[in-house]
Image (cartoon, rainbow, N blue to C red; front, side, top):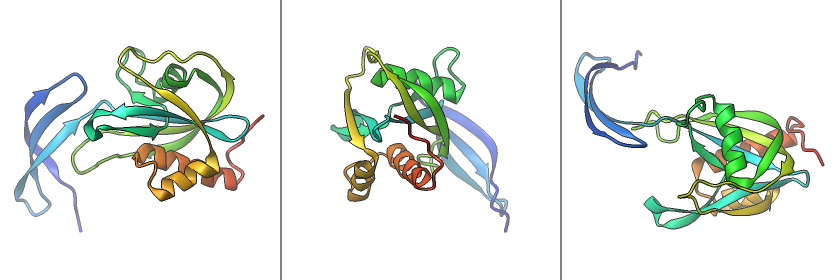
Length: 187
């Protein structure tokens, strides 16, 4: 059965610094129409840095929509000049949020965080650490760096201590790749 919907028309309801909201009229496979609310987002990149001892470098920061601190992989949106390339964005965010410079990046695929209403795509990478320097967070970022063994991070995902979807996905994929011998961790 064909499930494809097509855009008939659209109207922007809000244009902001990070997101835009539009309402589309979509033509359904049966020829009828339906309204679709779409949040446009430039997309992002998340990097799971792993040091030579097998520790994940995660960042703890306050997330306003949830009014609580969360533990996440370093991540950011792809909106800065010269930054549309996911890997370039990932390298920048890794350095900014942790001070780390990676020896290698292993693609972990893409994530659609909420396909029911947003076009956001998050590109995920694992990174092995070459060197550590000083973090350079944006002026509105307040971040605490945490080192957690990969195996412990997996347990934190399974117990619900890490609810962030990009972080869960990156940790679980990296763990599987490590166990399959496809994630080289270096001292």
